[in-house]
Every structure is written in C-alpha cells, then in structure tokens.
Image (cartoon, rainbow, N blue to C red; front, side, top):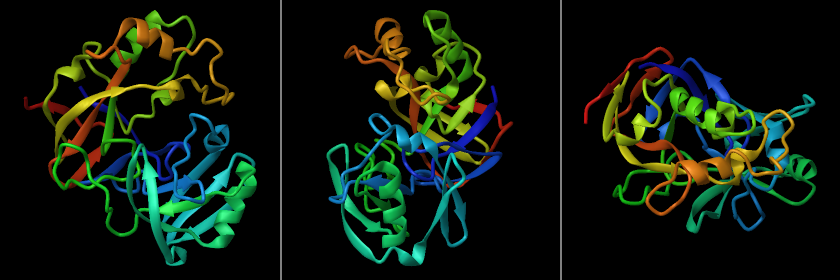
Length: 262
C-alpha cells in the first residue's frame, strides 16, 4: 500500500492545498489548519453551513498566507499583523489564538457578507488532543491527521446512489489500500520517517454531502445517508477514514509505503 495524495488545509474548511511531500509535526502536517475563520467572538465557522469557504484557497508563504477566491481576488495575511490574542472555540474547546489585521478581516467579511475574523494558532498551539496528554492540536476538529483509503471509497461508491469523490472526505493522507476499511483495524503504522498511533475512526457529518464542484449540499444527504445505513461505529454514527496522532516529526511523501506495526 502506498500514499497516493497529500492534502493540507491551511485555513480550516477551505479548499485543499495538494503537495508531493510534507513535514509532519506533533500537531499534524506543517501548515495544515494553522488558520481558521471565526465569528468576531472567536467561534469557528465551517463549510457545513458556509458555502463561501469552499470558494477560498490558501497558499503558505514565508511571511504568512495568501488567500484567493475562485474569481482570483486575493488578500495577504502576514504573521506580523496578528497582533492581538483572544479566546477562540472549536467544538466546545476554548483556547487562545491570534487575530489578523483589519484589512484581511474586512476582505473576508465582504466575502461572507457579515463580520468575521481570521485567526492564527501562533508559533505554538495552546490546544491539546483529548486522551493524548499534552499533545498539541491545530484548528482541526479533534485530531492531528485524517487518513482515508481509495479502496474504502470504492466500496462506499458501490453503495451510494450518487457519484462521490475523495475530495468530499477531506483527508490529509490518501492511500490506495488493499481491502475496504482495513485501516480501521490498524493501531500503529509508519509512513516515511513518521510513526503514527490510531486515535479513532472519523465520524462523518453533513459536510461530506457538499459537492466540491457545484458547492451545493446534496438534496438527499448523500453519501452521509448511505454511510449511516451501511458503515457505522458502535454508537451508530457513520464513519469513514481514521484519525492519527504522530509519534515523531519527519517527512512523508506521495509514493511512500505504509507499514503496519500493530
């Protein structure tokens, strides 16, 4: 089995930034979900409700990030302009983050049609992973990385009444796989220089029903409905992909083989 794709999401819930190799840090892939768009009070905003986020792409540069919309308009957020720190929130966890300068926030507010802010984790995340001690976490929902399998996608497509794509599942690491859902049995793996520990299967939500081309939510809630019927955890929640926690830092690349350690 090999890695077939690596994806960063520099700003939470925006478009993927595809790379051929990535440096893995304790909190996940370098540049992955280091930024997040929030309400003025720091509450996170996601593409579950905000279609506009899927119209935005983020490109890391040495001094910050460039944000572009699908019409080619852009704004530049520089690290040096994140001067104010305040509380932010993701799924009920509260932690400090840095607020972008007014120019960038105004640009994003115009795109979303209401006041919003861009937040940055800072040089060191002050958020941690549940059940993993003091392990740092980015603005990701619950864990540092998400691994998904093309073989598992093939099985879901067989079940699903509508065409689906891997992009809808927003994995960081995409692998080819041998058998559908075999990844859910792994407890420790190695890719490239990095060892990973299994954290949990990824429970899915309505976000996977958003078409990455039309940006609309599927009217019949597919493939969420299919997963709900065909593939769930012990609590009856639909699952696809696995969350991983890195044991060390290092480089992983497209083409790397997956070693099952446990």
